[in-house]
Length: 310
Image 1: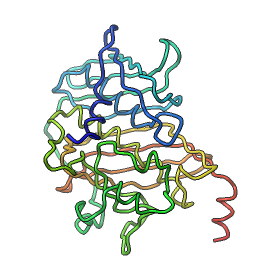
Image 2: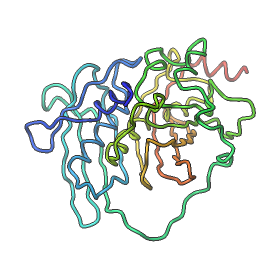
Image 3: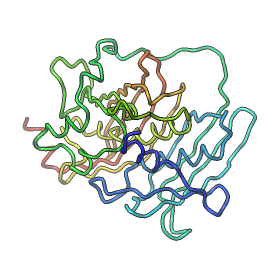
Image 4: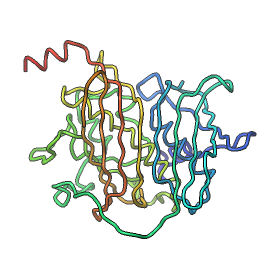
């Protein structure tokens, strides 16, 4: 693995605590904000839930709430509740906290697992331009792209970090190629585990690890889509941007050693909140995952006035 991918796997590799079904997770770092990146919460909670379930049961959905901001540099405590164990389905609830036991829950996640079954298959239509998308290898890496922009659209600690995933941006407000066919202004990406060093092995065949990493990545730019109509990012001054809740549905097995196409778009904004959604496709055109997120969005009046004058 590349150093960045190894570090990401380490973040999502939990240590068992003395209490049954309780785990200790690595702390977050200050990635341009004072609180913890939401993907850190999501990835670790998925890893904790998966650790209490038999391997033949695969996670198929999760619903989570971001309750408080975590403190970078301090480890997390993840407590798993075995809500239900049925013949086909089982449910786990994960509560993430920091500091002294009982000091308050920062993040709350409920996940459902199922034994894979046969049956009918169908899926939603492919993105209209899926077969004409630029290949990932023809696009700059995320780091190369960000270093080419002046000014940076996001804090440097975030924009220039290496966190183990190879992201190739197809469409974004700050990087939209001529002739783009994205009709809704969404952020669209190719993503896979970092294989930019061909001599380095990728991820092991561990469905729980791949699910945890995709959960981690799902918070990377999803909520950013709700600020697109105003040409803003969470990095803009006097823009308040906080994740509120998050949901993921895993429709089919995922393999992050292969490219996945993530098609994101804003859904609605109002009353200080915005909702965004994403569909995830594998290279063969199978719809493998869906995720949604609602975020708190407060925009300074001067940005709104500038939009009215444009």
